[in-house]
Image (cartoon, rainbow, N blue to C red; front, side, top):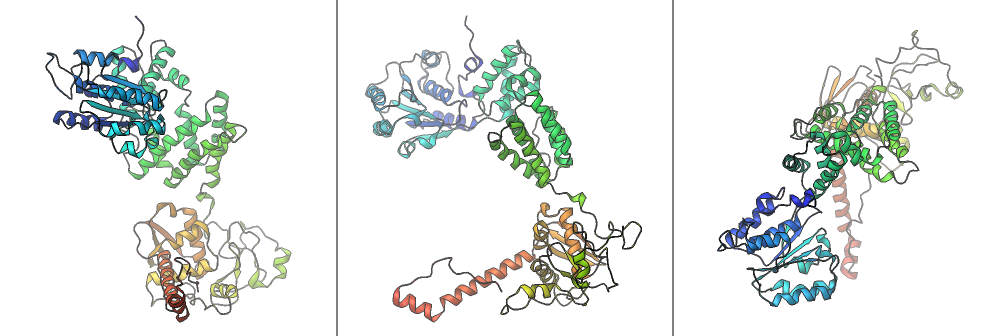
Length: 605
């Protein structure tokens, strides 16, 4: 006796055996039970989810005569009457299956519709099943429209397609459409366990997990891969042989890469990538597995306890949870995006493993190096101390006035310059660029002075800066914080993530030299950005002891929201000014002119 493949041997014979399509089974079962039958059904979905199987079960339900030959339409076909057995074996004369991929012309459809005028020979209904209906030509679709809309009472149409977008709207509107969903890996795994138990084939749980993930939602693909794995493993399924057969990457490499990326360990990343090259493992599969783990990590970070799945026997759950606690949420999102886009770059690079290494190292290049930004007060040696080496001023520094001297070290600016040729009183800093500063001889802050140098002559001056070490006491915290942040932004004292932290934060309190800010998004609360903002505030207020803390929570009053409200108000005022202008009104009245929407822009002061 010839061998029957698992996908055909275990094809469902009734609705109760259907897996993963409960929404379709419930709708059809209720319709069959109440007798509310449509004349045309359209089943859509990816390959191997049960479209043809559902159509055959539906045909059996419509024509089943029961064990005694006296049965009627039922949602539970008996499977033993002549109609059920003939439909299962493909020889029922009143059930016609047409493959539209190879019979797509108008002549084939016309030949099929010629049979519609004849009543069923042995069954209760004629059933025309057209598979891959989207492959029909436009003329073929047009030829079947009339019959599809008003078929004889004994005729039922069942259409199936993997691409419903290509089916004309005129056909879709005449059908009752059901979308068969791809099956979850857990659903496929559960069904494989049952099938292999009936087949008496020993299998390791991790091998079945690999097969259920590789099926990508298709039960037919899962059973076909299982057939192949049984042959590859000589009658048994173990993880090692299934992994070799599928060419999938061992997730221990994936976890090693993610752990190294979380720790910023570039050496381990490069070494692991080289191991993948030596073992001939797929770079695309590596990025795919990484994206899968990162997606679970992201869910765990957003909703703890929901990202790893319900299978407690999966040994990867604990490692996924550990990495979710180790890697910040924003880095998880960044790496997930890099993995998705990196798969498209593999074919562009001369070597896919080199492309894989570049994709992984890209995260390290963009990784926030919070630990490399030392505290501006505690980590900097005091001027003149033994720990502070003597530095000879640069020629341009020696020749420049004291108020415009640039420190020799620009990578980590300090509150007090490391080199001073003459003693100078501690005062507010003068911002000369985004990264350099020096002390001025005047006592007032120089933020406004720098802004005034860049301001046109007819532009109004910025509000006066607060005196050193204080904020205006007669203003609310929101007014004071918004004024200070806008001055820092105008003077280009803060940039990038530090600027966003300042603009999107709300000043919650000031007590004993400690300022408390609140932000809505945790990604803004990076240690590096906080320390840079603290340094900018220390310099702006001439208060080296000022400390800054950032908490995460809802905010109501931030400089960004104030600026947005002010911009909207200026825009409304500008539009009102133009619309009320006498000349504009004359043009509209006399010449039929109109104001183009969006063409009015307010000019920032």
